[in-house]
Image (tube, rainbow, N blue to C red; front, side, top):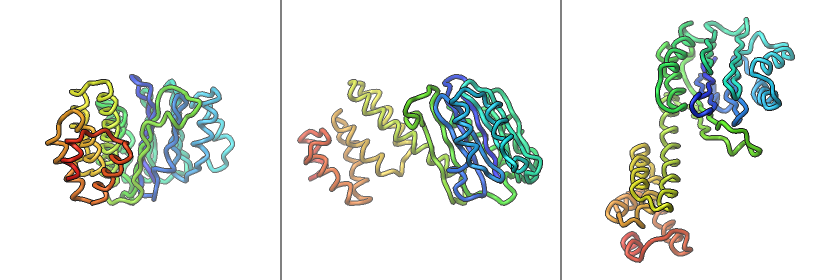
Length: 297
């Protein structure tokens, strides 16, 4: 009832899963991943335990194939499961049960696997694989391109509802939650892939705001300005991005631009102006007297 991709980026070592389905909140049940360990997509007649237990086995040293084989051997319902796993070095294992609903199947490539079931056509997984293999950009972009390729082949016979993406880093961590680079899902949307791309762009915008702050502290004002400009382009409708961009611009003397952005936020909701007053009062932002007077006149 779902199409998905698991992959490892050979350049960065990042691991990722992306999925779309006409099943509510599929983006929160299908993808599993842990930095420096592996990634899992569990779908069809879903047995969620393949996710956490597969990661447990790979963390303990099993390859993706060994982990999947061990879990399949324990599962009396394996014929209705579809599962893909990839480990931290790029080994891939995939299972499409003999009783999954047609059209169903999978295609593996170097450090990735594409799988689908209950599709209109048996071309879906191959189209995903071709697109992913030829795509450019970061891992998130390539995963999203693969999902779009599935939809171009008509995708799920029931239509579309939910999508998600999960990306983790390359290095294993004692606190694995710190290795999550991106975890986004849209649970009930008429165009889930378009909405997921919107969320990915918003996520990138917030990352750029953090980067701009670091660049400002390093006295790289030109780099900070470029980061802010890109964040605003990625999330032009976000008051949060407007507000914090303006606050970040003010110390560098870009008051005209900062004033325009912050007033757009104020016009959207008066709570932003009150927030700025509280931040200034508690010395939680650094604004010059000129900037404070201009923004809060």
